[in-house]
Image (tube, rainbow, N blue to C red):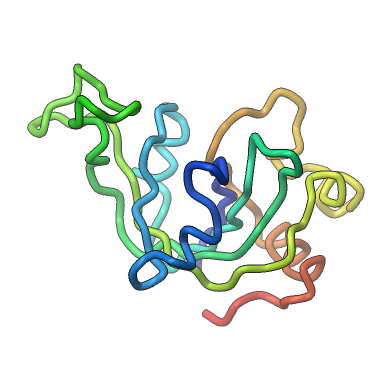
Length: 159
């Protein structure tokens, strides 16, 4: 049975449109530098898991589309690149510190704004809505997934 995740990205860095334009509509989710979010990718994410693609740090944050995890965790190449803002001088190829997964677009949706999510009682316990939550990756329950899909009028994706 798949798990579900909300993955935040700043649209000026990697947007749902960037994912739609990527070869195979797939790209590596890189640049995560929080241990708990890293551990979700490393220990709990699996191919076939559902992703709510969330635009953050923008004028209107919210869910912009649905994606799926299509790879197991693998070393994040940005940690080894001195020209990357995500370079980690303590990481080595023999002992990488950071991982990423590949995600593929399922469908771009209308934006489901944060305010609309907060207004939905069935989402009241959703981790992204908790005060002080700053994690870029959070688990989503199956009920929350179904509720978001219903709010988006898409129905859950097949699979």
